[in-house]
Image (cartoon, rainbow, N blue to C red; front, side, top):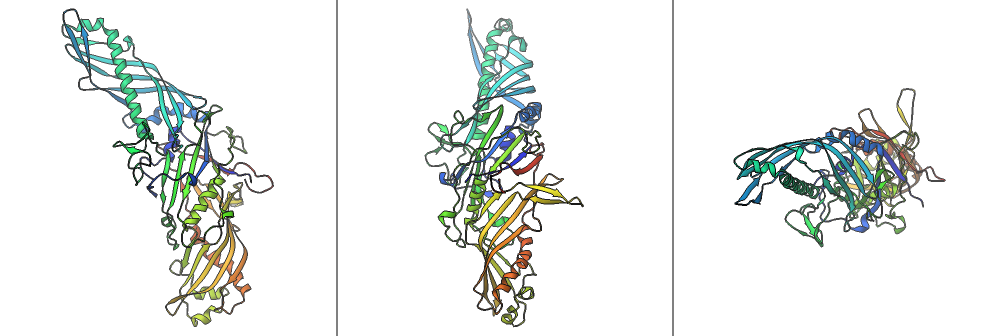
Amino acid sequence: MERTRLSVWRLVVALFVLCAAMACGQQSCSCAAPLDQPMEENARVYDAIQARLTPAAFDFIETNLPDIISTFLEGGLTFDVPSSRIEFDLVITTMVIDVCPQGCTLTAEILDASITPVAPNTLGLDAHINLTGTVYLRNDITCDVPIHVQNKPVHADIILRRDGIDHFLFFDIANPQVTLSNDDYSLDCSGLLGWIIEQLKGFVTDQINNQIQDQLGSALNDAIAGATCLTCDYYTGGCPSGSSCDGTYCQQSGACRKMPLGMAGAVDLAGQLGDLGSSPNPLEVTIAAGQWEATSIDAVVVNNGLELRVIGAAEAARHQCVPPPDPAEIPSNAPPERLSFTDTVPGDGSSYMAGIGVSDVFLDWAFYKAYLSGLLCLTIGTETTDMLTSGTIALLGMSSLNELTQGRSVPVKMKIHPSHVPYVEVGAGTFTTDTDGNRIIDEPLLYVFMPGMVMDFWVLLDERWVRVVTITMDLSLDLALDVDADNQLVPLFGDDSIHIENVVVSNYELLADDPAQIENLIPSLVDMALPMLTGALQPIALPPLNGFELEVAAIKGAKPRQGTPYY
């Protein structure tokens, strides 16, 4: 069966801002505990998410690069020139010059920049900078060398690579080029040998350039290692099998093991469900930039834009409330079909800077693993809402319950658990507006199908919990996702968002009510429970990323599936 994608088109300020938005730094996100080890290959979905930065995004980056860099580098573009010693053999003596004996600091200011995507995996960065600072020469001479570089061209290549062990994406910076000339600085020397330095200025220039290039390369290597290398404490079990800790990073085969550029952690689903009586097992999740093939084979620079693929992985231990799944119901985690990006928003033709496509293969896979964890095993009782009592249920239609309780209103529990694997379909995600200006769901964005949901009713009789009836049904929810005036993603349900089919009543021997009458009670019970089930679906804020606002243009199904209402 052809698989589909849910596409989210949004503003993104730059490649590394996109990565920062996904990233949780050197440890796991605050909502997730660290993993013990990397997730197994069989838990992964390759191409789970795909993203494209369009040429318009690179135009934005070029225009705002100084501001973008300033948000990530608090002190600006400054770097230290370490101390070194130069010796000149003269006719009658040897001149010794200490360059920056106490260290020197240079500061760069980016004036402009341009980014040239070069297939298959390179972003060429060309810029003009001002470079200021002072280089000190001491020992046999005393010279201050004020650097006053203006509008100096610089170049570097950002190369996106795929790690061959974990298949994560990382980057290198190659060919950093910035060279001083004799005209870029002056010499202010004292001492008898100062005039000799003026004669040797070209040689001094070469030495300064060597120092700057060495230090720049070292600084870049350190920065890249900090951003891409796997720290020894990233996983609670230490470095992954086959690697060893060098004190800071996990090393394997002469290179550092790569860190997920994204998030990796065990999500506490119980904490997300509030008071719904659920205690699911943690859901282990990894969402990180990566791909199966090397970037030299499977290009990431496509049609003058950048296309990133994301590995999505999910795993959970099966909860005791979840039956062993039928193998025929287990979704595939095979890589989905690639999404063919264009540089305009599907449907309206407007331009965008970044597009993100989420595969329904990954939606199904993640939902399946969440189901295994016990996410859908819920308990709603009188302690959850005082509306749920035996008296209320008797009034709704289960009148014989009063006979069991001898007319008393006693606590009740509804225990819900699944008996089949749920799944998700992607819809158009469209809206209409009523006469009062309210957004009304036209076509849902997500259709959530939960076949064979089991609802057991328990009543507290004589200080013991007694099950009085079991109701099994096929339940489905239609969910929309909108963006409000505060730039929040808002989950929405409509009046007809809940669908119930194939209701079967069992284990009702203690009741005198007709099973058909009990079946008719279901819509009222679901209406009572739904506000609690959906209350956890709060608006999702899209916070600024280092001062840049994310603006969602549209959230919709991207590729219609022929012969179905799904995408």
